[in-house]
Length: 253
Image (cartoon, rainbow, N blue to C red; front, side, top):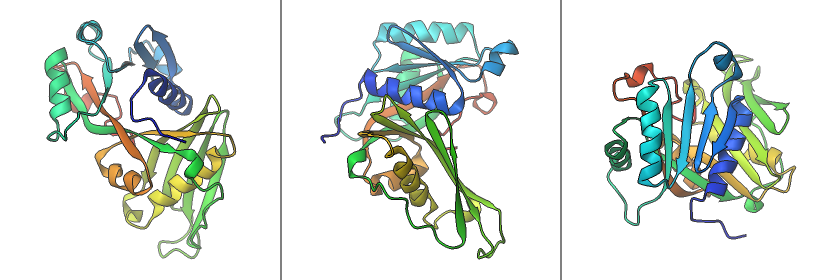
């Protein structure tokens, strides 16, 4: 199948739906603006931890959301936009939207990436003897975690890597929170996690894979056959220190 090179609202909605399901966020949509509440518990506690998400938004929409964040400093904005026709300097997309909105960049240089799931291997990958895979099957999404065995130099039961994938509308596989422990990086566990998650997603007739890639993961996903189709910037209130912001600054944590 042909993979789209355009960042559509349909793709953004699929990504948001899968991400909300995995992270237990409450998701709502009004017109072109999506909004997610981090957890039901935050609402019960009276915390205003909403994030807005817009795709290829007009200046009018950006202004409207920015005004809400300026009135509610704990809220944040995620902007997804088509890639520029020509390569841009690092941070230029964040600077562009910061100037348009008056908000402070928090997460920069992240990419929306897609892949053709019909070209992925449906079989579970072979796992090296020093690791074991633990699979948790949830309602509409899967978690895989790799732990060390007795064969590992560091001993057994050390968490080495993990990742999650959600199946949305039977068509999309949304990958999220792909993580490798620092002591186990550069050992192929990122690729192993992605291949294992793909085999789980392909228990369904999924066609398109979706994820948001931080700088550290982009080379890996490109190597695995993923294609960048959009930039992602996270913006917050200009007077709030980014270190105090609650939003995940890289979507791969």
